[in-house]
Length: 481
Ligand code: UD1
Ligand code: CA
Image (cartoon, rainbow, N blue to C red; front, side, top):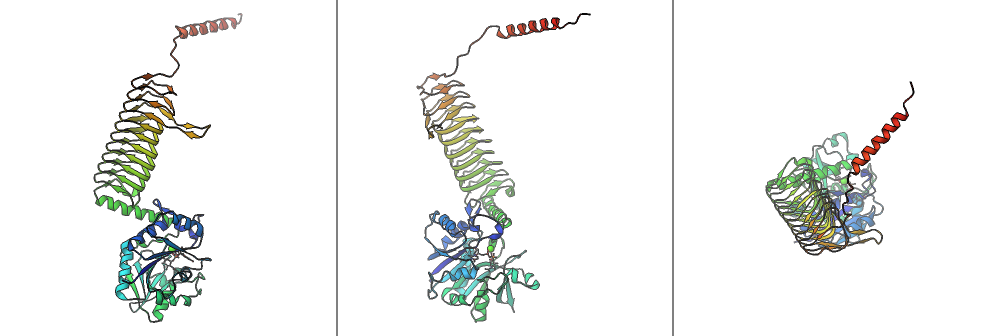
């Protein structure tokens, strides 16, 4: 088979987003627009992948090199950015015109295109032996897109929105902005592009008209839905892309047996996995490597972002889980719990209101039902953390974190503070209101608070003394008649 190379155009500024961040680095449900584009190209097994960068090139390159991709990406710098055609001209030094290859060209601002679509474009291109193949969709509102102009039912050229006549603007056929081209023939005509248009740019789209004029075949592939070709040029389109991607995930989950109470109220990243018979209530935001077991109840109002794993038959209600969290089966979290950064929670656990868990292993059948902070701790099975108990893990003077260990079967009384590092050994107990600074031996009860003192009749004596003082004051104020 003929070799295939991919080119992604990502040098533009994205002026309409009015942002300090380069357009292609804006996130859509946890991954940047560009990362979503690159990931949809990877399964095509392209021989090389070339990325044209320009505006804030350093920042885009730095981001891309962090992704740990299975294949290297070659960068080409476009400076200044004089249009999509000009962007392609910059590739010629590393992809000379005599390279016998087909090239798939796509834009770095279209995160919704699925691999199958690229695949079908490449297949049509191969089958039709065209010099170039492009994709078009009949759009409800094609404003902003190039329009496909036909003559006698045959493709003639693409006209950009800004250059289109009022009649051309009525054409519903929009240019998706992805192309497959026979590089040796196509690239020869790049030098023919000019800037004689409303934007003063070298338009890649003009290439298609040139090829037709020169007698080359240009195929058009019609796509069924306009959702996928959404290019992100504004914050409105960024929001639209998020909605489409989330709705796509929702459809997949519902097909797989997940109940979503009002899917339009939630944001669901494509990466998330959810088991059958789980119910997700309104207002949930789930992004990243989120894996939820079956028969769970999630939400309302729950955020999971990062690497989050939830077992089977769990409840996670109105809570915030971020970065790295693992939760065992039949565990109940929330409402209003915060689990983050290596919170490893066992089975049949109860983590209740206003409990924060960080860098902590919390064993099976253990409870922290109300108002706790559990940080940098190893907590065993069958432990009860009383309401308001706190692990004081941080030494702010030396800026150090210390680890506390609470072994199996320990009961920690309400409002206790464990000053790390301490070890509370098996089946021991800490009395309510204690401040623990030393290890507690197995089976012991540790009490570390002021002993209660009773002052007999203090209240009664105080009240009568006050009354006496008041009556003598009243008589001294009586005026003579
Ligand atoms: C482009 C097409 C339009 C199509 C639409 C689909 C052109 C002239 N127009 O318009 O027909 O309907 O995409 O979304 O091609 N870029 C560069 N260098 C530049 C300019 C742009 O690399 O000098 C990159 C951008 O980063 C972006 C992509 O090319 O990823 C498309 O550029 P953009 O300015 O968004 O083009 P559109 O106006 O959307
Ligand atoms: Ca665009």
